[in-house]
Length: 95
Image (cartoon, rainbow, N blue to C red; front, side, top):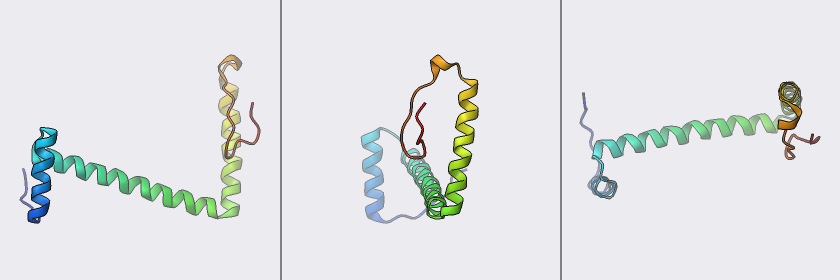
């Protein structure tokens, strides 16, 4: 069941424009925009949490230790001819 919402005249003009450009209904455009905003918000919250973790020296050191352990565990399950070398943040030792 759809629910009516109120938007400004300018917002409606933009919605009509996007609807015509994309050959989709205004409802479909709104749903896509809402989902995009939800994803943006989700990843923003992940980035905030990641930055908080990275800025906490003790927790970050523990995280890097966990990653090193997990990387080693994963590498042990992959045949040697399928292992790629990686270098970068947190990967001080390339295989």
